[in-house]
Image (cartoon, rainbow, N blue to C red; front, side, top):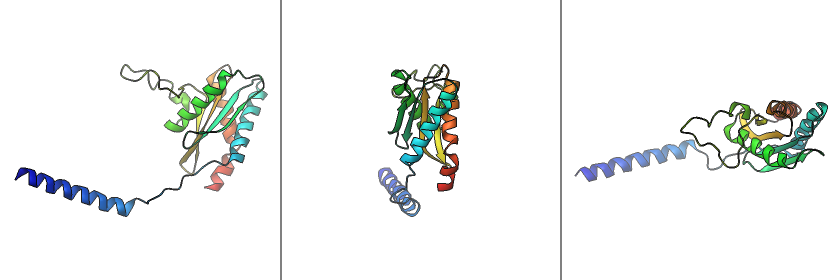
Length: 167
């Protein structure tokens, strides 16, 4: 008897949940993507902002899926900066936050010390438009993460108006 009541309650719950899901959720979702032209514009603006400060850096831009869209390494930027910039961009996109705000996120005793594929140090920013996350930008190669982040911000500033108008 108890088993039959339990099965009936579970069936009612599942049927109710499924009927509401059908009413509320679309079968597909549109995903906004940054165009290649705007990604290149942001990346070049980032490089130029760092050059004005006398620095050669790498800038990486990832799409909403975390895939590389643009990677530019300035002439004298160290090869290691490519991986670092990519991982900062990936972290900023996944957490939808500047990586400078994430630096202490995993330092408590019960947190993982390192998550493979992301770097949680300053220099990564999420790319958003109309309240939607559409990617991430990461910079590496300046003497400090603060400078990396300032250059990334300059790159985003170069495309913000066009992004907002497109949404």
